[in-house]
Image (cartoon, rainbow, N blue to C red; front, side):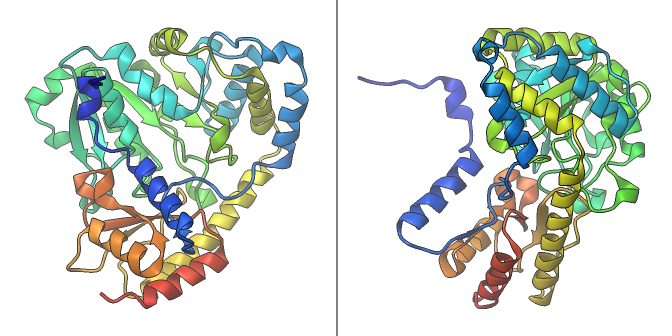
Length: 388
């Protein structure tokens, strides 16, 4: 049988993190001692009180039914309370929709608002799903370079007028993956004005908002800005905050009409988030956040060891303010892909080549801090022996 793939699938680049995972599994089969800084999947366990909550909830047969709709009322109320405490932003119940992880919601987002030929403004380097979701909706991605010169913020002033006229949506992601940059209030205010002026929906991905290293400079929510709720929504996830990546639970909040559109798409694509997981998510959001603070301390220790070690090896790297990623400049004379391959071949280390997340990522490597300090020190000793 001659299998013919949809033309949209043909347009997709290889999904970077699936390729990295394949590479790691193949190496492990060969018996290599791999140290992986590749995919951003926390190595720390989900806190026990959240696991216990799931265990109790899963025993309730009422939770075994289809969980249709925008999410349990109790889950959405927990989100509203958490959001108010964290960002001092008030949300109404119809301004919140449960998601099967923020990735699912981000991927579905363009299907609700993008028509063939519409432009979506996509940051690069960036999370690949912004691009793939656009392609699946027959939209046209326009890439906004994130450069160190501009503090890894998109320069809205250089987007061509003819592009802006066709643009219907803009993705932003702060704290940023992969660069670890944090958006300023000034940038968000400018973004709101830009969106209002040009009738563009803002999609803020805040999956890493709780991984930061200075309590005096906690990352902002886009929705904290006056007028933000008029033009956009924000995606949140329990994956990285509570080490619940495999649980697949998150939410989107903000503009009521946009939330309604997302919910309509979801009604036709999935049947909601397993209710027992929603109840465990309530426990995560409404309980003491000391576990989250402890995770931040662990990531900070790892960050400090890795960055200090790379600097001793003469790598050009800055101390990240947020996320559990280190965005490091590579040794001169190589491409990002060449450095990633060299580290794999000569040191059995997996990391993410910057250009795999967008052409502006060329010249950088991303290390995920999902490796304990013993293994980080081992990795540094291996990198020392690599011939450059």
